[in-house]
Image (cartoon, rainbow, N blue to C red; front, side, top):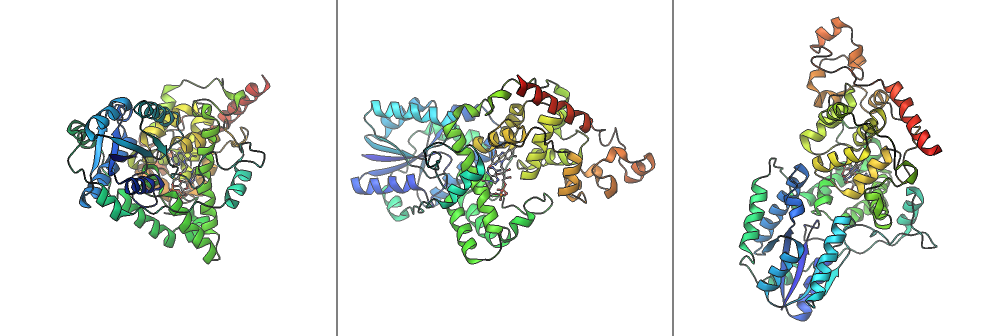
Length: 476
Ligand code: FAD
């Protein structure tokens, strides 16, 4: 018989509870172990940068495993088709293990898998491992879910943390005996997806992720509280793409940060741990309130009269709104598939407040472009910025893009990096280049209206309009 481990966004061998259980199960029941990855049509039909990064990580994971003489088998098609092929080709299956996720897509897929496997008398075990505290496990004393981050995080901090689950690689290698592809067609389909990626990344996968963790613990986390809000400084860890693919275990990240917190006097590690708790918080929100994946958490804001101005939306997407800090953020996203957190807040606020465009459009755009795209955090971040989420920024506190630029990129170092047309604009005008007199524009080699746009809207006016939109909805 064969025990199966189904990899999804948990592409690693370190601290992997589901894999550790599968290995132990195979050893106890004296079965083969088969590692599989399922190429779901949902992802192959929706090619974008976010998926490119994920599939290249999956390919590098498969290659790394092969160098250890371990095969990760590809299956494809709808879930039922993939498992039919598995049952047909692998012989008797005595259990399938996987790591659960919170999105509606993942839940539906797993329900289908569970029902198909149950019909074939195969037990399906879902073993948590992608969060520090699994969604649904940090609750108020009366059992209610938290809707506000601060009390959630206090409780989260106090709860005993799960032990890391070591995978016995010797047993794993010994049990993974099947080296020949189970389904050649799926292997080829997977290769086609990987070869059709339009972008490629270096430092993908588990080894790079563990190295990044080591580096950030030494060089970034100690000063994190001072540098995390400045986009021009490499002041955040940039581990998010590794957490998205599961190349890095977040529980391992927590362990490293907690040990630093105990042994050093600075507040870097503690501030950093609070950010990790946000990740768990937003996953817990989707767990308890799955409707928040599509609808505004605050019901009173479910029918806001969002603008349909497509020119504004394109200007935002392409980074040509005429507000440098917004445009630099969007160009960073478009160029490298990642954006600094402060800029995610600024650009999301600009779209929803200054342009009054539906947060869902921005959320979807980020979803296509972010290599760290994580639905729970993305939806949480967008609903926060749009003032429609749980524990969101109040609607009357509208970010001024100019003021944000002055605070978080005062000399325009970051702006100039992503907007080379503003390279020679004097510091005095870097947040509002349209205010440059003509002679200064000529000297800076940046003519407003041709090299760089005029602001697409008047912030002061739009701020009033956005507040009025929310107030009207609230009064109804
Ligand atoms: P660090 O500052 O080094 O933080 C370490 C880790 O903590 C991050 O990798 C992340 O896992 C977690 N974290 C930090 N801040 C947050 C936060 N506010 N919410 C949830 N988790 C957090 N994060 C994603 O991983 N995927 C997304 O799709 C995503 N979309 C976002 C959209 C918007 C509009 C906003 C405002 C935030 C979004 N975030 C998202 C959260 C945050 O911006 C990123 O996690 C962070 O920028 C990743 O960079 P880092 O790894 O250097 O972060």
